[in-house]
Image 1: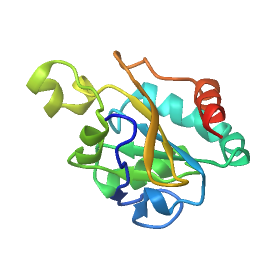
Image 2: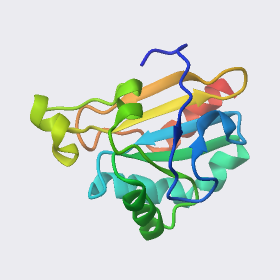
Image 3: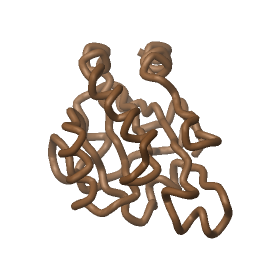
Image 4: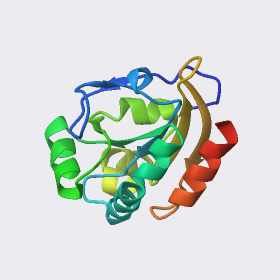
Length: 160
């Protein structure tokens, strides 16, 4: 997805907050959207734990965080419960939003069908002030290729 394109969406929420969540309805200036690979992804779980531990740093800067899983609402809720997520965990079972945002996949048709094998991580920073617009993305080339919390906060700081 290119910066400047309307990036609003509504998805079922298995974590804290309203259900469903509409991105433009979040109470924040900016939102970090973390597109995870799969319910079972170890790198995703570690990233989620780090983001959760530093959640207050995002809120202090007017930045919301949402996680998006290519899973059903029930699986997103179970994932949020297991991780004690302090932010919404959204279900994108058909990966429609992830594909619109450009979440990369590897291994062709097989990778597109098997999320844990083919889906790569994607992080996006979205502006909610004037219109819902993508400001920055990091598309992972490997399962572990994802920005740190410090990277995410630094990118958000550039647009605050």
